[in-house]
Image 1 (spheres, rainbow, N blue to C red):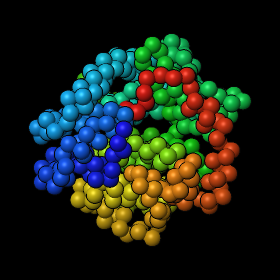
Image 2: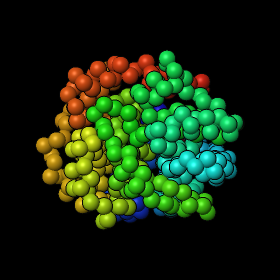
Image 3: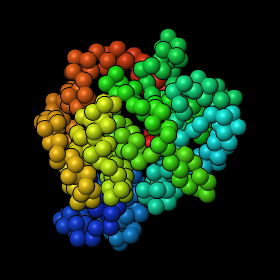
Image 4: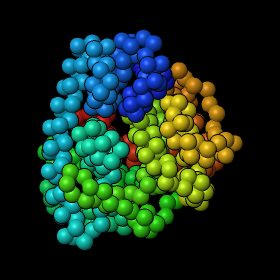
Length: 365
């Protein structure tokens, strides 16, 4: 499979945004660039987004029949998956509500509904739910009482493992649930949990209103998620697109300087400046979030410079993702030795949780 380039990512963003002028300039060789995007979409979980964009601009004729069929197959699979997950979501919401346990809906159907236009406009393979940290064990038992089985393995017990990871996976038939109890688990990050819950908002998804993260915490969550993927050497193009979609949608209303200033207290300053800057630079998308771009420009001295490896969001040396790990270590607001010690100490727990029995591809998460 040909790997998507930074130019391809720029083209994807403009296709989704409907920027005809930039699309035309980006299509110097339509069949080659769109072919790479199609292959990346099938592997990386943005087939629905890409196929819709191609159809909206009448560009599907520039993609081979095999590529179109592969994209359509993924879209069919997503529709079936969505029906299953959207049946499970209100049932779980009612169960948690009856038990008096607060719940926030993350990612998946919420991102699709709000930032892509409708529930079927973005791929997702599971439901991501957030509960207060103190309610983790109770929430796990609640899911198990509903018939869900924890698929995440643990090391030396669930309680100890939960100190090194931010979520466990559960499954019931074809319905998969990621239960989160914090946005990220790292010693340099100290999120104000009470502020997170007090700042929650609500949004309608598939005809029902659910509590979701406030806009500032949504940006933090998306940025930290992408940072973890970059560290592992497995960044997802669709997560770059997600961040740009979120940032452009809220750019006029959010206090970016305030968000970054709070980051100096909770340890998200370096991650936000670098991950958001990397996304806007890599996708040439500063014009889509001009207020964010201006705020980031005021903190140019916090950007971590690294030698690209030739792969989007990859840094040299590429062997064992050393370059990506080195970049991530310096991005966090903590000494590199602290980052490394945490990485080494948490590794057995993270490996246990994430190396689970196989299930359908998680590329759309």
